[in-house]
Image (cartoon, rainbow, N blue to C red; front, side, top):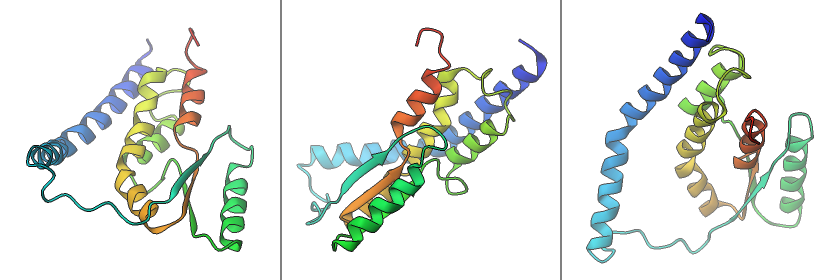
Length: 165
């Protein structure tokens, strides 16, 4: 392992560890509150919303028109009277996970081919985890929430790097 790769991977691991330590206490508190509510028979839980939209993910490799298709789908749904919005992943500039993805893609942790697939997948997963509350709110507000990339694109990109894939 060359020095540049070693430093890059250590930087990536440090970024991921920093995210985990900052957010660990709030995640534990949320989980504890949920367990307490369930044990108390659901007291204090929010009622299910009267409306919950549908989630549509458009997946594909770079340059295949995902953004265009997402916009056209949104426009078509709105033209027929439905409410719709588009969320693109990674959510650059809006989440810690996406900021790490951007650093990874710019080669700040070494060449993308040198970063192990499972490790490279973590910032994408963090970005999606950070989006849960936003997506939940959007699904309560809109008939359709269209995602420009989500899980499958990440699986395909990182899976292609794995020797056993």
